[in-house]
Image (tube, rainbow, N blue to C red; front, top):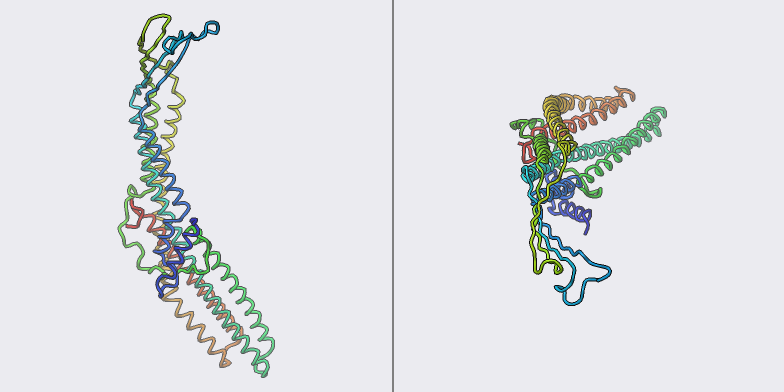
Length: 416
């Protein structure tokens, strides 16, 4: 069973498990995303790779075994008899490399810092994916409400058009007014089709984050977040944010790489011991020792050192830029959340009742002949625009709240 099939089965189980649940909740969507989101899986694979690099960095240079045979003559051959009676010179050697300058320690420090950076990047990726998930989830909820509103408007418009046909037949309505209702019905039908396409697109966006195929049963069931939930939690300091901690770990890794490049000034030494047997020269086995050191001037590793210095400066610059961006982001998101909460509250508490009363009053006045068809159509159009703006205000508030909570999230990748 492949990943897509397992994910689809998990969503299906979540949808049909309790008899009272007919849709996917946000908590269930987070659980599915944690298991199947492609970006999170890629970050986990990258973490496994860096852990393997750390194991390689801690490995000491392995001893080297060498076996050789020399003095093989084309004229006289290697001689008759057993191997020990041959004329050839046989050698067996063993060599060790002594790393100087603390190279192994700097390699381990660099690898450990990169592992920590990969772990924090995984948490930061989870934090960002949670923001995207909430935006996609409530985007689906907004598309569902817009589709429902558009369908209700389409049914109401069809009923009004049918009633107009009866009134035209009895002479109570002029055909030109019926034609105006028909034009408005076309607009309502177009809006319903656009809302249906928007709903399908929202399902695809959410399904991609979940790592699954889009399904008609994918339905957002949670309520809109309450405006009063606008960041009552304590804000974490900038140093506790996972993205800034990851940047700090990359600086540590770059500093270790710089020290490793500098340690190359102290050349490694290779020691060896060798056993040699040459029957034609000295009977038995003779022993020998060797030591080798690479030669070169002071400029031998200058290029590597310059590259390491440049990488360190780039890591420090990136850390500074991230801190400035994080500080600016917090200030911007704080004001954006406050504005979104005020806008949603205004639509829900002030403009909502007034718009509904205006719509109901125009409907009643039109039925009693106290209002014109133009007034009725204008009232219906204003009501549809208000409902769409209300859904947009709720979606904007949910997105702003998700971004704010992600911006103040701490080391575990969750909101405080």
